[in-house]
Amino acid sequence: MSQNQKKTTSKNDNKIDDRQNWFKKVMKNNPDIRNLRERVFPLSRTESFARIFGAGQEETKQKLNDDIILQLIMQHLMAVGFRKTKTILEEETGIKYQPHYVRDSRLQNLVRVAIKNVDLVWDQTIKEQENQLDQQTGNIDLVGHLRSLGLEVEDDDDYDLTSIWDDEGEKKNIIYTEKTENKNTTKEEMKEIEAASLNKLVEILTHEKQRNVLYTKTFLMTYQSFTSPRTLLTKLTQRFHIPKEMEEIYKDKKTIIQLRVCNVLKFWITDYFEDFNSKVLTELQDFIDNSLNSEKFNKIGSTLSLIIKRKMEQKNKKGHIFYDPPPEPKLPKTIFSPKLNLFDVDPEEIARQITLIEYNIYEKIKPSELLKLAWSSPKLRHRSPNVIQMIHRFNLISGWVATAILKGERVKERGKSLRWFINIASHCRKLNNFNGLMAILSGLGSSAVHRLKHTFDELPEKFFEELDDLETDLSSEKSFANYRTLIKEIKPPCIPYFALYLTDLTFIEDGNPDVIEGLINFQKRRLIYDLIFGIQIYQKPPYNFQSIHQILRLLQNLETLDESELYTLSLKVEPRKCLRSEID
Image (tube, rainbow, N blue to C red; front, side):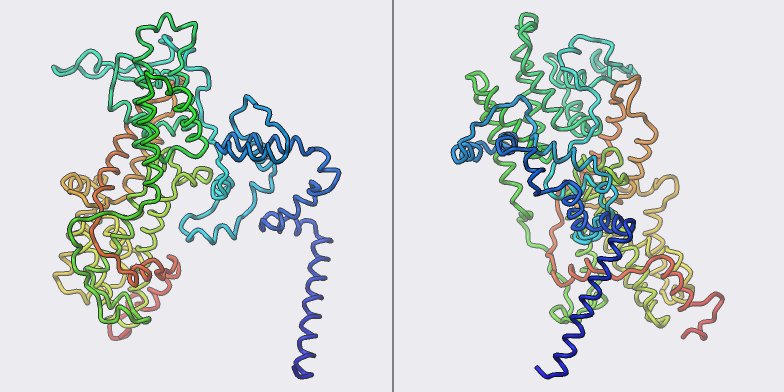
């Protein structure tokens, strides 16, 4: 190294030292700035916690001795089902675990309480975490961040925490609505539940005489709008274990009720296995091991355990099995070129790849994501990752269409782009991808593109006719009457216009109260069930197209400008009242 290089390096080191000293002084002399920094950056916040609470200091350690800490750890291991690990820890430490009546992890609860009571955590902006989430999930709240770290956070939305047997036989905790009578209506069908307590709803779910499959489906699809999976499991196990003082009354009904409980559990595990986090799954397995181990229920217990095992195995399986080959992809000669441009690709193939991306999101949407307008609530957004991705994808395609057209420097270039996008929209319609079609039409109808008179003059008549037909199918007139009629006749595979479902759900949520006279409004849940069922119809079968990695990569990294930038660019390429000759 030369002398000049050494001098330069020395100067740079001094600058770094000076900058670090200056930074320390600023932090020391400006507590407001230090506080803001600690709220923004998690690492700094952690350092602040250690400083404030004396983590690692001897006097802090003495407040919790080793025995207490080990008991907390062992109780946590028992709560999450790691019994063998707990036994090994007992052997190695020589400390015997003291059983505790609390089934929750006390260690996790302590952490949650500590975090929940620290205002800095609630106010923090988790920038590093935000950047890791493909930008489509938007802002992250504390609950979502804790879940991303594997900490399960229960939602405080339980209406009824009393024992299910306290409501048995009580008529005041249920309201019926009378249905319109017709020749085919039975007396039982005439009575429909309008509202009830949670205990009553579970009682009817496992009733010894009544068995309504539609009621069971509605309940299991929508129950997370008024209680949690863990509470529901508690209610079902309470229902299974009839109190000794009531056994004489229920001696003829006991076995039937218990079988009904097992049947509901089977239905629940089979159709909604994603509801069971590790804690709830552990409690379910405990119930199976301890309550279904008798000769009477052993076979049912084995069946439930087998379903759980299969569901766990299916979690790791990806992809679909097709018995017919996909259509031949329409690929450009430049498909392997690093300079591949989407405009080089056939519009039909672009439509196929857009459809694959959107379907892969759409098929993953779970009913729980659509309850309580979770996607629009900062505190509930963590429940709706796929809904949020679907919204993001729509906005991305719409913005890309407008941006790509306006990026054309000449009128003929913009006209060519316009024709290309109309062709893609037409192919999306043929593929029954109404969501992708609407996203493209949204981009074409944006104010920045719609005003481009000279660009639209480049379209041949047949393109105007095609565009008019597509816009008619998805016209918003009379609450999308044309589209609603059309979608009823469509056979899957299909991707519906998803935002319309969200609009309808918003009307249901805002137009119907959650509770009636202090009871859960179950009639509202029927409306929600009908709508979500409509979404599920099109989640199968999948599209049989070949994924083209090079095209998918480009479609997932599209360039978009915001609305103000688009309009500014629109005025630049076609100023108001300009002549064609002035811009060509």
